[in-house]
Image (tube, rainbow, N blue to C red; front, side):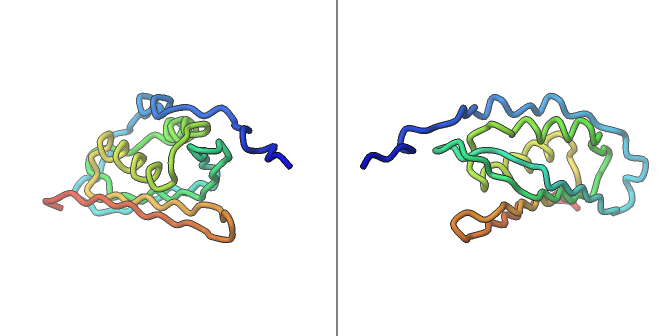
Length: 134
């Protein structure tokens, strides 16, 4: 009996499809405060780099802004650019953290990815950044 799924693959794109250039910011008027901003979406998806099967997650982006806030429509487009990118779950969460920290330069940021179960195992990834002088 042959494995009919052995050669089955879906289109998988590389990291170059992650569009951080789409991100836009809004000036934050209270840089002296330590206000926590939190965005939550259950629509994040990327794909397994080996099979092309979808990895869906609830994503929480929590940060203390310094001088900029991320504009939400641009954040949605940025996150959607991961849709067909072949990337490990752990790498996706760290890449999002790196891109947003570089773009916003917050005092603190935490990205939490809660991925749907695969084989009965759920994955929760937490990546953090804290500005040294914060």
